Image (cartoon, rainbow, N blue to C red):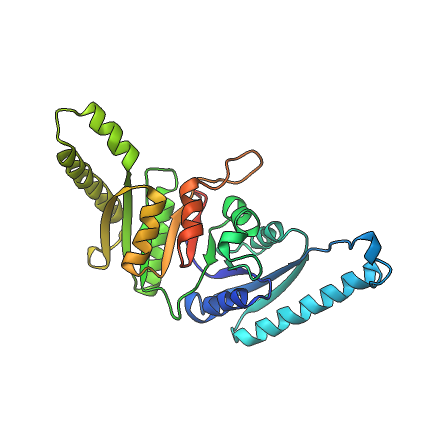
Length: 293
């Protein structure tokens, strides 16, 4: 697991450029960056074609403008190794394809410049990438002014657990950051447990579940090799999405490492409801880990 080659999706909006600057200056300053912009050519309505340039001329003008902007952004980043890639087609598909071609380690996309941020972008480029990307996707929503100093790692029992822990260890070690391992006991699960554990008082049952969950979490953090002096094991009870968003605010989190059950491909489930809730509500960059491999 490494961070040597990173694909950055560009739409030339202010937030998109801010994400690229954060990546180049603070996140992976020594990495090779591939800046990707995909042109989606849309045919104008019939009633406008008489007053607009010919379709071929319009396409060429659009491509030339995009190529110029990619070069300008690349020069402004002042990184050692930057490669511009201009493609044509649906942005999510093209960004993922470039990541495959370059054998990238990570994809970064910024907040969308025209549709209300990640909240508006969900359902298009960001969600498509989170579901289908060949590598983890970092949604750089409101990036901090420096490297991440505090990382939140929500976990659960799933095939993505070891991968998420490995990413947490890599990032915490790279940035000398504090890592908060976070497990949420669903309030609905607690309610069912109370029904079948009538011999125990409700508060005693909750205390026991918290204790067991904390021990389970600590064991996995130990197994992943995360040093105890730079980590915290935290357990909450409630709705997982709501509790994760609250933890982001309470701990002053700079980066969330978020496993999601979406695995890509035709017919697969959309990004999980918890991940969707966090993407919509957390005002911080989120690394979406979407595949066990």
